[in-house]
Length: 457
Ligand SMILES: *Cc1c(COP(=O)(O)O)cnc(C)c1O
Image: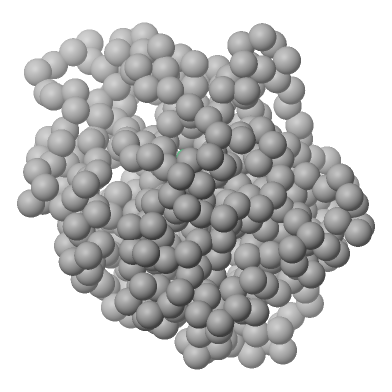
């Protein structure tokens, strides 16, 4: 069956760590639609300077440069926790009795417990390099806030984090980790910003959303001298930094003489999937691997790709950002208190949105009980307790492997295991004692939220 002499864990050597990030836009047949200012004109790089550091604004707008050198200071930290292993899930394959080969790239081997550190380190470095005092951000489940706290402390920057209230309450120990790295953490919506106060005035019990926390963090950045805002997903620059995942994976698979038939990633704002899939999407776009499938997996409770609209929308609830063309549920969409906090975002990466729209990608959604079934099986077979977000990709990989069992095809399945779930034990508890529920928004809920889309073009 699937037993062979190939290794179970493939660790690249430190000297094989990529020294450049790959910008997928350079190989896209058509560029994503440009970011728009509130008056409907395309945003220029300079328009982003009040919010982002200059180097990051440049990376955000550059659709031409294929490779960007990774700064030496960033590589120094990457070397502390990278290259990340590519793993073969032999025991899961045997348990599923599938002829498929299942590989996963494990990004949970750092204190943030996720891939988020890859971009946090880059963004903190550029902020430091520009001479800034501090940075602000939002965090959902807390992985991004933790990653950025690690990176900000390393480079000696202040950090202010707005953490989505439902996560702040569900995961108090996340805050303790961030505070260990000297970050200042507020539950969002908070009474420290105009955006937060407006939301609390409308509903004092509002449990928060990423969109709302973004509004608060941006407000603090633009009203404080020497501060800029940084974002952990969605943006082009974040996908660029996360390409390190895909480049390592591509090299490790080459060494094994393997190439995936299917690449699967959970999708919140699209950064881990965009990073993992970048070289494979390039091969698909350029015709080198026409038949490879790239699959985004999202929660049924927050189905941006599968039920959203491809339209210009704000990136935050407070409607303060430029407009991005993306698959969106509407910036006012309030996802239910699903346990995959990192996937509770109304929008999606404009790069992946364009590729999905043009038929280069697929998307599926799952209810959370189905996702936790997969998480539990994976933990028992592979000995890694996955993050609920990551478990979306596991669910899909298992289903693909089960399809292979029916058809007898020995496909090579690759998925991104973005992180670990040690701060998600309330969710695991609920699943284990049978009290976990599923929530799927109605068409009416979605229509209502999509009615609020800005009118442009
Ligand atoms: C943030 C996060 C995600 C989702 O974010 P993307 O930008 O879509 O990758 C997935 N998994 C984990 C563990 C996360 O922390």
